[in-house]
Image (cartoon, rainbow, N blue to C red; front, side, top):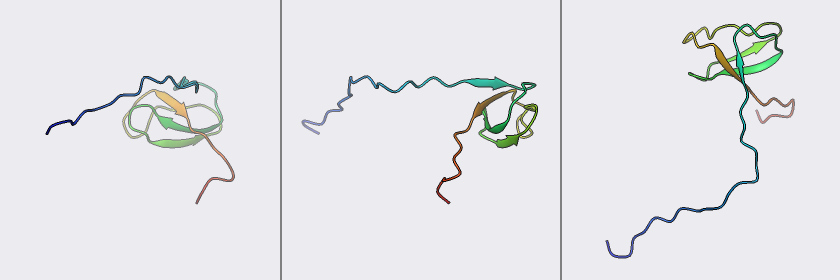
Length: 69
């Protein structure tokens, strides 16, 4: 294949891509996704260990009452 090339952009995004992880046992309220398997839970008090894989780290899920159905 003559002339086929892959081009990678060197542009840097201005968006901050920092992800905060929450450990099991932390007082929290909201929706969280397991950092290992993606299982989602809604928490009103203390974050548990993941019931699916046993992971202890969670990532807070963006929530909106206007989310697409």
